[in-house]
Image: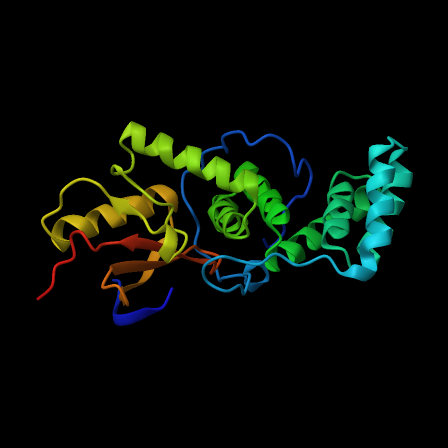
Amino acid sequence: MEVLRLSTRLAPLAALCALLLLAGCGTPTPVPSVVERPADTRFVANLPDGPITPPAEPAEAAVALASAEASSKSGTDAATQLSAWQKAADAGSPEGKYRYATMLSFGAAGPDKVGDGFDMLLALAKQGHGQAAMSLWRLSRMSRSGNLNQHAPYWFNIARRSGDAMAVEVYDKLLADHRAKGDLPPGGGTGDDFDRAITFTQPLAGSHEGIPLEYKVAAVLYPGWKRVTQSLYMDKEGKDYDVLVLENVEGQRVKLYFDITAWMTRR
């Protein structure tokens, strides 16, 4: 979608534990406050806006990947499976790297390799690997650190935009639940890009009513994040969009898209 930007308005780990990485997504322990600290660029993925194309499987890794998948399905011992997935990872297979990293994170190669597993998952997520991003989402949700809890929506955003089926399903249900409870205004869209921009179905008289609803959505979906910029766009069909850039204490940023055509106030 081609859009024209009309204006921009500026608005007033160290280490992560990889144990239990893929455990259930329970409610994180509440924290009294979030402590500001310098942003840690290690956890920032330089990915394009909008839909993300996950890393592709190279043809030269096909044999090693097929062998690892066969080993996993046959129910061989963990050491044999670990070796098979390592060979697939060494061959350059993203799936091989993900499966090998996951096993390392569970301690399959001993506690000294758990951190290596996390580093591999982080590298994959920064490349747009949806399952790896979902793994970091789960880990961030389980953290007792307020700073690391703020990582969760960031990796969740990347997983969705990468097309991870579980991320998309979970988010759709989350939005539906928030809207049913009244936490979010009635409407549609996910806010992940122009094509899936959030809309409000209630009649709005103009920006003075619509913009506060945008801020309410941002506060619910990205709690504790600050608004960095807010930009107005118009596409070739004359539809108007508002795009909020949000940032957390680690310097991770996301864009939240709103279709404001129905209530845009023009002066």
